[in-house]
Length: 457
Image (cartoon, rainbow, N blue to C red; front, side, top):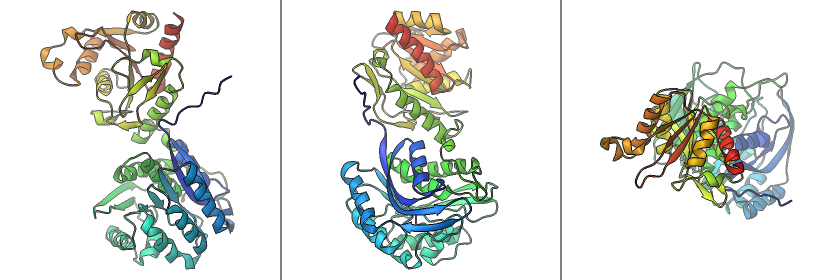
């Protein structure tokens, strides 16, 4: 049997340099969960072994600096990451060895300057704090201290947003280009994360504080999520917003595995189809799955395909996630040209927005080719409606993207519950089949039925 090795077309690599957490909520284990849940392949460098649980850290054993350096160099020479996250580094020799190795990295480096664990155990030797910041600062894209850490690094007491601004500017002067101060450790009713960009712009995101007795792993979740989004080529501003949303969701879904602090759930955080992060991730999962479907390329039209998923209550194209570029045919397979982003699809997204005027529960769609064979399969298996391109009004025909909205509305007026909407094309306009569903895998299930009958018929 020939092994089918999938090409790395949409998944990228990020590197976590951190300590091992035996409770698996934070550290290397937490970063692996976060990277993986966000569609990023996780490589790791272990800097220390900890014996800890949800109650306390019993022991911290640093890894030899030379071994840490060798781990970093091993990753850089074979699987170069698109972003690097640095977490716990226990002492100055390891800091220096890691920084020397990372000089060969050609990607953004994010430092989460962890001084204490969530159970208040010291994870950084007191003498190493100055070395941590001064050694890494020239290499850093972003540093992400919490309020306590920002106070120790900057020497600025933080009681309000004005203090956070002063502290961030002080940290920026030490060499870090961008500074994020995580606000989860302060405030009674609101938790505010603060971002100071290298151009001096300040951005704040405030959320109502979640009433929970602390949480183990939330700080690592945030910095790892930020790294994952940066690795996927999101801007720092957008990565900041998405990481904030992701961490908020992971805390809301925290649960107890022991007698101490509850642990965050970075896996469940993305499975919320009501939020932007959940919608984007679900769409990416569906697109990744399509790559594995044999002979799907036979259904890709000349103008190519897209698979989209809209937010609840979507109003504009920007509320609909889809493949940036399109899904193209390569041989007998279908491949996404890039990854999933909001606002990436125009035509299929317009079709979903039109459908939601009739049934808001149908939030996903994909376009495939149209011919008599596909038409007959759809008519035998689904509820189907049609519209004719040559009937569209002139004021619609010459406006980009308006045809599909008009056509879907016309078809649904005839059959409001149609799963499939077809059009027979027009001069210079390819005929098309649109498959609609509640979410992407609902669309894929219908697509699979069509493909199976198409191959067997």
